[in-house]
Image (cartoon, rainbow over the protein chains, first blue to last red):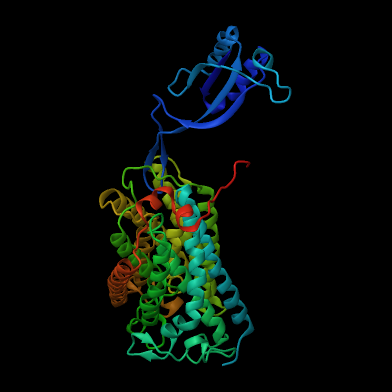
Length: 112
Length: 409
């Protein structure tokens, strides 16, 4: 089992979610995050002049899938979240030791 | 003279309008602070409404408007509202109850003290601010108010024009704010760190309440429901409109039309027209407003970028500089047909000189006295919060509250 953490642009969430749904990956957790990468930040306006904000709002999608599904999920996220400009985000894949479904107590593969 | 019901109704409504400016200012300032200092910034204004609201009745009104002592300060004959009753006063606003005049003036004292707080947010110790406010309203506001508006006050006697408080309120607060900033020092991380406003819609709401309340401030200062009130009302709106729009254009030229800039400009416009509203033709408010936006915009650039003063919410640049321009503009644009005094444009150069004397006298007094009082507070209770408190924010450190609580929204 692997956990996939995808940091994406806020406006790409719907497209990514739909693409995952089409491949039958329903479960996910989405959170609002701030971060920075190569994009460096954007200028915003003060009363006079401007200042740079270098932690930009992004969305983080987290989902846990079977090892053999990792490639398909990554493919869905990358194909929908990419614009080609800096700031498209990043995907992390982490090993997962155990999963428990709270409602039933099912474990691991049965709980995904 | 008998009490006039129309005048009385207007002054009471105006008093309520001016009171509303202080909560408006709280939101205006609060939205510009960082999230961790939002409540603390709002609290400063509300605490001042409490403190100064009481002190004004106890001795502030008397020291400002009591029997004259050498043109410098009022006497103690109105102490604790003695001799201030339902009938008109002998010297002021002869068609409204003395109590109505007293409370109208009290609202000015409240907002003047609250204005200063914008310069020192995010680092001043709350207890120090309370002590300073009590001292300041007694030893700076009351004398200056007496000089300009008190019967027998020396600046008023000299012929200095200040219709609604450009000098008494805005120069006084703005220059005092600058002195306090120099004593208190910069916030940790200034300049350099990004200090983002936490809620610009809140700033806009506050500016809206200020604009609304300012009609009471300026048009109420005619102290009667008459043509002069209408003149001041129209001039007030024109200046705010012209200045807000001008600031927007300047920010657009530099980059994009900024909301924060536009509402700041409107407030600067209100500041500038304050001393002039009942002395100039309404249409003169347009150039007064356009010029104040340009002057205040570049004052902020100068203060923040060049001098690196951490006048956090630009109290000196907007109220001090805007107030100075307003006082001088009154000397330039004053019209005999409106307030009985001609200005520079109508050939009376000496009025501009008188205005200049008023500016210098009040600015020098306010700066020196604030410096002294600030020092006094610093060596007794200490002006500044500790480093750790400043880092975690004054909401938690000074007030034990936070603006947005809980995990479930």
